[in-house]
Image (cartoon, rainbow, N blue to C red; front, side, top):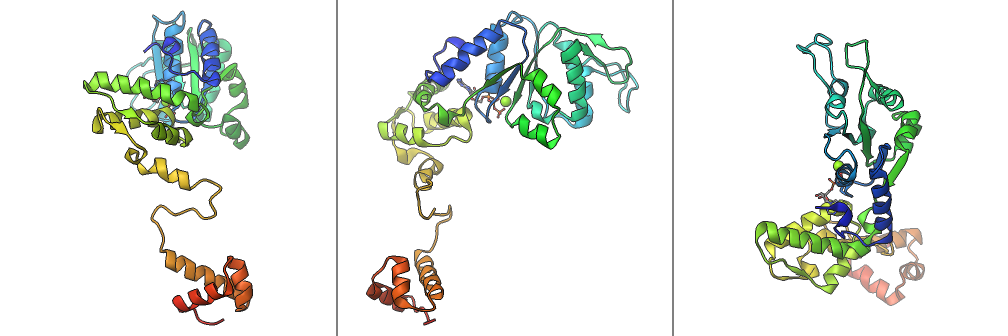
Length: 318
Ligand SMILES: Nc1ncnc2c1ncn2[C@@H]1O[C@H](COP(=O)(O)OP(=O)(O)OP(=O)(O)O)[C@@H](O)[C@H]1O
Ligand SMILES: [Mg+2]
């Protein structure tokens, strides 16, 4: 898919992101992509690489959260034979493999502090040092980093180097969460439906107006990944049919009743309404020392209705 020309977003916020991304793609500048999970950070990093003058050179990815701390350094910078137990031969690292191209450091927020220092050294001088070596080597690598957590918070906690942050943050690109670009939801749905119709050779389903309204008001914690998965599921299960709000998984409709203007939010597993009512009447009576008129006022009931309910639930006099 051609990310920059595929019309997968029309919201002003996404269009401006595309414009900046296209401009920086043409340069060698270090990029820090920020965004919640599933917003498309890896997809954007890949698109920037494809659009850059380094497009025919290697594009190497390391997920900094996926390796144990002890292995990250050797994975990135390589090691010398005998540098540690198990280092049976010299090994070249990902910096070497990415020479001339781009290294995508995903989840940079998980990079151990000791390695952050070595990455800073590379960004400042272009020098890398293999584990167990004393002589550094030079490489020409463009860094794109991504984070789904707030690095400023980590700096304050002491788990991320501020100087490295400044070096990485030369051009920050923040991908907005899907709930902030609701204008793009329909475009993305159409994009995914036609993608799945082709890959599964099926007739795509149609989303009716009410369903689209529900989707626009949902908060999308999993962002575009969650939307894509929903489209895939409905394409398979309801191919050729019209999708009504009832066809959506329950989390899409329960949020409608759990908005902040609800006085009481119904728990996932439901409640026993009679028990709740009896308990609230009991609390009102306790608070008013058993005064029925005051309790009725607290509950917005007439005194007679309260007396009826006290009898109904067999609530003992206070
Ligand atoms: N603009 C887009 N158009 C179409 N599909 C997209 C777009 N952005 C993301 N996706 C899809 O959403 C899914 C998640 O994208 P990606 O893996 O790039 O997100 P991420 O931000 O790296 O997530 P995480 O933080 O969980 O690693 C992928 O399936 C990708 O194909
Ligand atoms: Mg990712």
